[in-house]
Amino acid sequence: MQEKSGGRKDPWAGPTVEARRAREENFLTSERSNPDSPYYLGENHSFSRRAFLASGMAAMGAGVASSAMSATPAGAKNREVPPDPTKVQGEDTWADGGYGTRSQFETEIRTRPKTPTNQSSWTMTPLQNGLGIITPSGLHFERHHGGITTIDPSKHMLYVHGMVKQAKKFGMQDIRRFPSISRILFIECSGNGLTEWIKPTMKTVQGTHGLTSTSEWTGVPLATILNEVGVKPGAKWLLAEGGDAAVMTRSIPLDKALKDCFLAYGQNGEAIRPEQGYPLRLIVPGYEGNTHIKWLRRLEISDRPFMTREETSKYTDLLPNGKAVQFSFEMDAKSVITYPSGEMLLRGPGFYEITGLAWSGRGSIRKVEISVNGGKSWMEAKLQGPVLPICHTRFRFAWQWDGKECVLQSRCVDDTGYLQPALAELTKVRGTNGPLASVYHLNAIQSWKVASDGRVSNVHYS
Ligand SMILES: Nc1nc2c(c(=O)[nH]1)N[C@H]1C(S)=C(S)[C@@H](COP(=O)(O)O)O[C@H]1N2
Ligand SMILES: [Mo]
Image (tube, rainbow, N blue to C red):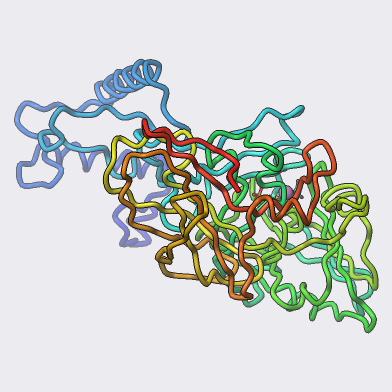
């Protein structure tokens, strides 16, 4: 009625959704029997909604049956594999609802070690099969002290107060309006490898080194927000607090906050994942993972550190003389061969490309060296670009294996000139106090033994 009187042009526009749907259905019904139409269904084809639904149900049934036979990997969708994919149409465009999945044939997953609770726990990145330098968001390692918090971004607030001229609160929309930056940075838990101090315990590189990951992070420089509130003279420290059940809190030197910290809302081109602190996390480039407060809700400015639980009883380094080092923020240079690595099998002598990752919290990787004889001699590996500061850097090394037992190692130098130490050198400085010897900041050279039958295993060799 409206159309007649009002003369609307949109052919689908009608007074109600139902009316528009009916019209569309009428249009399609006539088009399906018109041989000149792109909607033409062919001579003996009858299209009924009931038939469509029935075939849909049958397909779903098949999906369920086959996925029961072989479990679909997390993040994938099980699809029937046609005998000849050139003879049948592929999956409908947009059948995924607009958000893609990975191939059902890819099985990489984060692994979780046994922990007393499922909330205070870890998952580790499968570095052994990682490609390039970026960690897919769904494989970024996790460390939660009180589970994965669920926050509605429309209700989330960041409070900034303390030694400031004007305390302020910012909603997510306020934060996103500020000029932003993106940086590709690794985050490493300082507990990465903590069970490896005295003897090799984990079998794979996922177990020994999987608490480091690299993402492109996008957010607002902390300096911008601090400028908004006006930091008072004499301020030297900043407390960052998470809105999770752990209410994780860490003190950060104000100099560092102003230098390069930022409030990230983006990860690898989309919003940060819930596990990584959605909707807002603090990024503290190069500092131990614990300082990168997730689900960030409060910043307090002060003239002294806050001496929270995490920076007094935890995340300190006990020395041989019984004293502990506090605020060992920066992650030292570290590298590891990811291929070949623990639990892999080399199928006979011949060519292998040794590859792995190197990173430093103090800058860029300048050099990576490989030893295939347990550290007797070293040869330079190729660094694959881009070589970015505070970022996983991929190295590659062409190797002919002669089929004899050998020990593979990598060591790196960062642009401060620091050389990654052997384990014996590191324990000389750090000591072997405590049940695990030391706990945090293990950055020693990793050794993988290749047995003459090609089996690769985690060994201590230095
Ligand atoms: N709010 C909050 N922030 C947190 C934590 C936490 O449990 N709660 N864990 C910290 C630790 S110890 C690490 S190593 C990193 C891990 O970040 P990821 O889970 O994104 O890898 O987050 C840090 N930030
Ligand atoms: Mo951590």
